[in-house]
Image 1 (cartoon, rainbow, N blue to C red):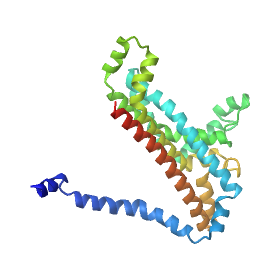
Image 2 (tube, rainbow, N blue to C red; image 1 turned 180 degrees about the vertical axis):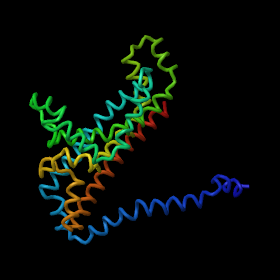
Image 3 (tube, rainbow, N blue to C red; image 1 turned 30 degrees about the vertical axis):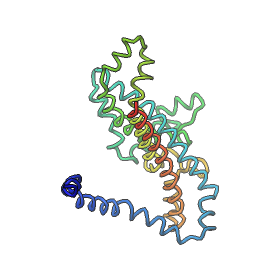
Image 4 (cartoon, rainbow, N blue to C red; image 1 turned 90 degrees about the vertical axis):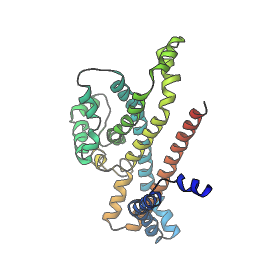
Amino acid sequence: MSSLGRRHRVLPGFGITLGFTIFYLSIIVLIPLSTLFIKTATLTWNEFYHTISSARVVAAFKLSFAASVIAASVNTVFGLLIAWILVRYRFPFRRLIDGLVDLPFALPTAVAGIALTALYSPNGWFGKFFEAHGVKVAYTPLGVVVALTFIGLPFVVRTVQPILAELPPENEEASACLGAGRLKTFWNVILPELKPALWTGFALAFARALGEYGSVVFISGNIQYKTEIMPLLIMGKLDQFEYASATAIAVVMLLVSFLVLLFINLINWRTHRRMATR
């Protein structure tokens, strides 16, 4: 009887599908990533440390991670606002605007980079306005943030939008009946329900921004120690046939990215657990 119960706890075909899943992930993810560590292992510890601690690499690390965090944070705020408007209001051309949110998904990143550079260059439509007020966007770290914000926005909107649409209106009505204002209702009733989705959207936007290349390479200007990002630096190492140095930088970037995403997922998990125990 117990063996029969244990036999039926697993869905039919679980062993085959699990094996295929592990095989597929190994081919697509694990084996390619393992080659980074294998190639990096050809360097001595001193060579590895010298590669990742050079001033140029450190400057590119700082810009890539700082710009990715800023862009993901901006997208979290404005992505929530856009999702809120698309879900809670009905207005002309709403479906068109909803479709435009996915444009960064479909648009080639190089095309996006050229378009952003044309707009924010000193002679561009937006660039002229900012230049008149003493702000330079293109060929500065600010331009990098603009490009990363552009490509990361859909992740937050599409993550928050379905959760917001499924929130029961009874909770808000009860809050209003108890005398809470709109701001207090949003802060105490709606926002806690959206926190897991917001953290997930932030993590996706951050991960996307961290590895972005095409949309940044034009607007950044690729100035060493100032606007050079990590993917561009890695590509430069590969063009110079410095494969071990390129993989060393990639390994450090991979490890730091993993730790950041792990931290975000832990926060998300704690938020889910706290909400479940209420």
